[in-house]
Length: 164
Image (cartoon, rainbow, N blue to C red; front, side, top):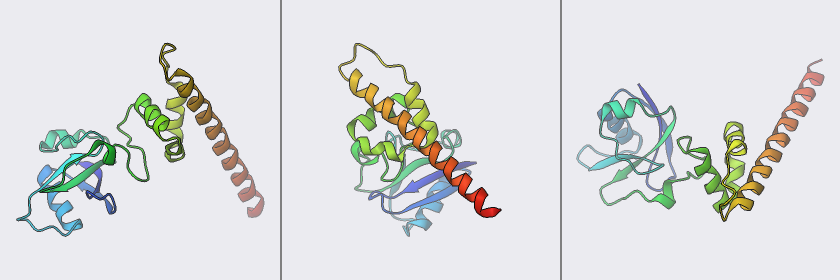
């Protein structure tokens, strides 16, 4: 059983789908996006455009992988789907996420705590031309993690005090 998130080419509509096969994934996606059976569609991984045609491959996708439903004239584009509008793809390596944040630092706010921790733990190549940038991003991720933890502690304390 595969659990995926699916979006359309525009990335406007999203839905969660549980499917046992590629044909069932297509069937449910068509229903969600109101597409008739005679219209040609394909479903690809958002992270790299890999076409999903094999049931076994589908079953081995990580839970909540983002996939894209493409109609006949639509094509996957790296810049469009590498990073979804409101999330960072969970399939990306920590260094890939670090590189994406380097390209757009505002993406850091979209990272969950685990992704932030993974970036903080990335081994950096000191010979890299972008070493100092990556190092600053790691420092910023560390500060963001600390701020989030502090906020949760304050929230828990306020909740505890108001419950008494």
